[in-house]
Amino acid sequence: MLLTDDAPIREQRPYHLAQWAEQAERSVLRQMIDVVSRPDILSFAGGLPALELFPQEAYAEAMARVLHDDARALQYGPPYKPLKEQIVALMAQRGVSCTLQQVFITTGAQQALDVLTRLLLNPDGEVLLEEVVYTGMQQALAPHGPRILPVSTDLQEGMDVDVVERWLTTGARPAFIYAIPEAHNPLGVSLSAERRERLVGLAQRYGLPIIEDDPYGFLSDGETPPPLRALNEEWVFYVGSFSKILAPALRLGWIVAPEALAPQLTVAKEACDLESSALTQRAVAAFLQAGHLPGHLSRLREAYGRRRRAMLASLAQHFPAEARWTEPTGGMFVWVALPPGVDTVALLERTIAEEEVAFIPGHAFAIPGCQANHCLRLNFSNATVAQIEDGIARLGRVIGEWLIRD
Image (cartoon, rainbow, N blue to C red; front, side):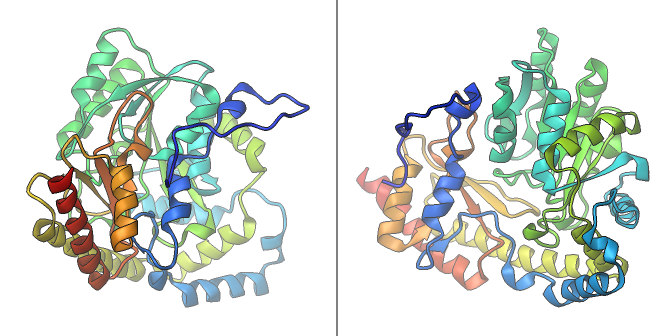
């Protein structure tokens, strides 16, 4: 078995842990990644950028220049102003106007989610969360033990804002709502322009902070609706990241938040790691200053778009008629819904054994009390077109046989 629902036996300890730590488990997603990342497996499982598209040479030049010219890159120091200036310019490209004082550098977007959660959420508070959502947000919430108010998601238009409004009009007062409006992880869907307007309107009317997670906004094809932050500066906390547009190992992200919260955000951030790497901040700023990013993003959008289209075409050719899937315009993921009786954890075991192809079963992303056992997430960014066409054909074969036999 790849996974078991049985909790591991905990060794006897001479000390007591916090209650949340005693109950904590590694995320199901991370457990699965360990299994499906074997070199003999054709994997659509991870959320990985393509290795061959990393801007190694240009970043190496930027890093070498910084190390040669600026010893402060190896010292403690405040957030690097030139990087914040570059982020302000990047945000303008996404249609968001902000100032240097509203930009907070973080050690990756995951730290940003953790800092904002600690800033906004009291112990045992309430949070609005989609029924199927990024596991990192669920991990950031776990130590606080909140009551999760579930929100369904339409696979064409995104988060069901009617459900959000129903929670609010019936008296719920959550600490915040978490949203991935562009190329949702894991669903691949983007929130429609009309739903973005309504969601921001509800936030303003009820005093509901929105944490907007936007790791994929720079990877979308063509015209996209503006980020939520572009619609409201007071109630939207924007989270950005260099992980998907440069490289995950940089561990560099940012928050755009109201300037009035700068003291609290600074304290929350310092409690985590004092400061993000001065060296990485300067190297990324040098990379951006040299003008490499526009061409790099263009190459990413072209390559990922070609792979995405290949996956969608292969799904249409090889998956059974009973299957349904999202058709993203960017990001890295396609979400597939199979008939309700299919157990995609068992399906994954069969697919690995028979065809050496991997995916992530949907239940890895479901919040407690919600089900996605018949669904699966496919990643298209980290495989070639040929691998996608071959792997989806093999996966479709197993699914077709499953539906016939089971």
